Length: 633
View (tube, rainbow, N blue to C red):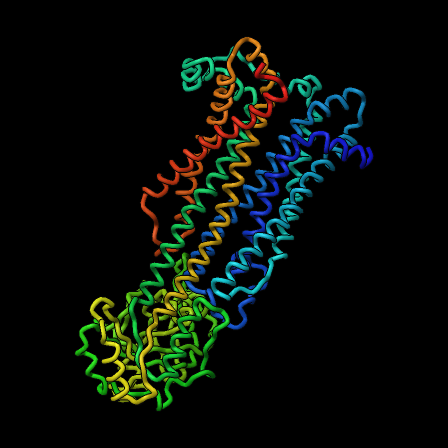
């Protein structure tokens, strides 16, 4: 059969193929958008690919925040890829069900089965390629929008696309199309011609069979319930396909809704605990400038500070804490924390763990690097970071989550050698930290001073936690104390600006799941519309007959509404259940889970929106069909 005949047959059934293409376009666009955005923001989900787009700051977005995004995005990707294959299966099955009568006629007049298979296989591939190509470019378009948004908010994204994995999944979907279409065509070809022609009333349908208890109870309520149930039973396989599809799509929708809340609440709470609020730092101007930038590294990959930018141990930066004892008399200061910071060359040391078989296993690869080490006093810590493990005393170090994730394998079972201090420290805890993207170590201030051979009153930073209400005019007093006792080159700086930039960055990341939520919601609405459209066309003869017998249009609409309700409501419940079961399995242990009221509220909102849209789409469909078929006469 010629290409011309193929195209004519394809466009002859455009009323059936176009809705399938629209659904496929949205699914592929969502899939492409998700894969590319994961790559764009640096989520290392796939084992293949180059994730070095943040070359200025190699530590950018590599800690626990990245981990929770990666975990939830991985769950979304699993559901998205599975859902795309399910959509392909539903579309191919529905398409061949519509073409089943054509296949039977061609077989009846002596058509060669292999030629028939090849013809309809080409038509299916044409449908898939049109949907994929248009969906691909739509996904790229929305990726560009997200890139522009992220660049405006943070100025941090470099435009890049994950074409490797896009190509891999394209071939996976192509293979899925080939296998699904081939199996379905072979099954249709092996069926008797009488079964091919019986698409309106399947041969296996027995209307006299006794219904199960629930179906029997619903049928007894009214004639509308009985007709709607019989219509569903007539197309049981189609109902099962759509139930599976809607269960997965509602599961993905609920998962995205939960992800948006979990990611936002967890990331903001972690970073807020790690940074604190209303924090001022006192020190030399150069130290304050670079120290604040080391916080901004969390939200801006263009910023990177290392030992070549500043020597924190320069004698011009060191001052005596005793020189500014007057700070303790300022009422607006809630707490004071002394710190000593410098860059140090460090090396990961190998450790031992016991595996599942009870045998010892060596861990660690002797990684080396240069990171900031900060001396702190545990009793006066201003921040209240999330910690796994505990704060240790001498010979112990607490490290940031970025260092733990990228420098160690099992940090709490390993040690670190600080070459600058000629000392080995055991890792006692891991904290979620935004400073230097979590690539930082904290040790006892007194121990640090001893190793550097400094007096116990010498530091290069002092942090103040201030009360914004009672602070008042104390800025002038603070400036006077610092300038008078330390010199003109010493001052104070608020970290609130850097902290706000980090929170704004987290807000910009939250736009990504919102985009996905919009895509999936659009797909739900399109799918509901197409499902009802197919149900209406499939039952058109019945509706015309019922209308001729005197039924009102309202009755026909209620029958179609009930058919849709049977498919969507159980799928809604199953989707929420799957989401609530699967989401905690992919989460970081310290993620903040929402209360039970949130998924329940999300369910009722989705249920109400579903009812509204079902009613609206039924009204639109009946208006179109009544005008075309004169059902109102």
